[in-house]
Every structure is written in structure tokens, then in C-alpha cells.
Length: 169
Image (tube, rainbow, N blue to C red; front, side):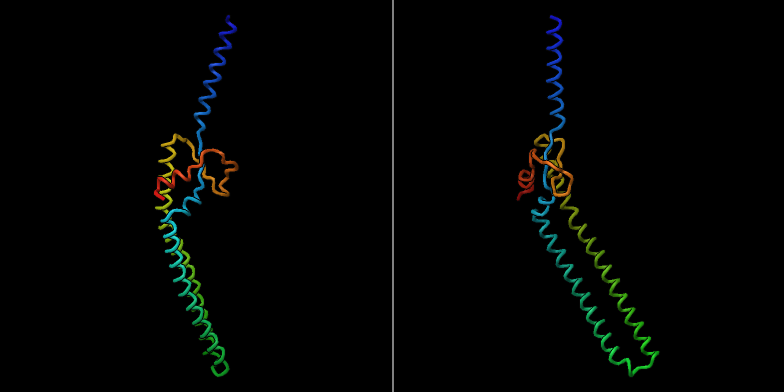
């Protein structure tokens, strides 16, 4: 009889432990990259960034064209100018070229700053929606199943549709 009680207690403890372990590992996944790309706010932010980038590119192209024109002009006039004047012109062109390089770097920094300024609130909104849906459905862990994120198998619950519904699209 003692054997039966011991076996019964062991079975009950095994079942309880298995249930406890399963409760501890309730996980879901979501492709965060896909979610962000589908958010209307992200599409608007990307359009704004593209417009800003095109503006910077046009300004830089204009400056490069001006540099090329000066270079051609100075090169054509070089034989009729003194060596001292040609050296001044060469320094002028170098300074102009350096200014263009600095403008390119400043444009890249401004684009990166604007991208962060636009994308941070969108990312926070997506994260809040993911957390809300996960909590409502009882998930303790939500893995990012975006390609390259480290998730190899994502066969659990996919929260993408639920989070999109939470965000209203």
C-alpha cells in the first residue's frame, strides 16, 4: 500500500511539475520588421525621409556640377594665367571640394537624426501594442521572428494579425 501511495504522489508531482513548466514557457512570436513596414505611420515617415534625402542629393549634385564647371573653366584658362593665379585657383577648388564633402557628411547625419526622430515613436507604439496583446493573451515571452533575429523555428502563436488589429490596420 505504501508503494501505491508513493507512486501516486510521484505521478501527481510529475503532472504538477509538467503543468508548471508549460505555464512558464508560454511564448509567441511576431515579425517586428513586417509589422513596422505595414504601419501607415512608417510609410509616411519613409516618404518624408525620401523627400529630405532627395533635397540633400539635389543640393549636393548642384554643388558638384558647379565644382566641375569651375574645374573645366580653370583648366581651360590655366595656360593664360600665372602660376601663382593657378595655385590660388587650385586651392579654391580644393576648398570647394572639401565643403562639398562636409555637406555630404552633414546631410547623412541630419538624415540619421531625422530617421531616429521619426521612427522612435513608431517603434514605441508597436512595442506597446505587442505588449498589450501579449498580456491580454497571457504570453510571458514574445520573440521577434524577423529574418536574422536569431529565431530558428517559430511554430507558436503569431501575434502579427492581433497586433495589427490592436493598432487599427
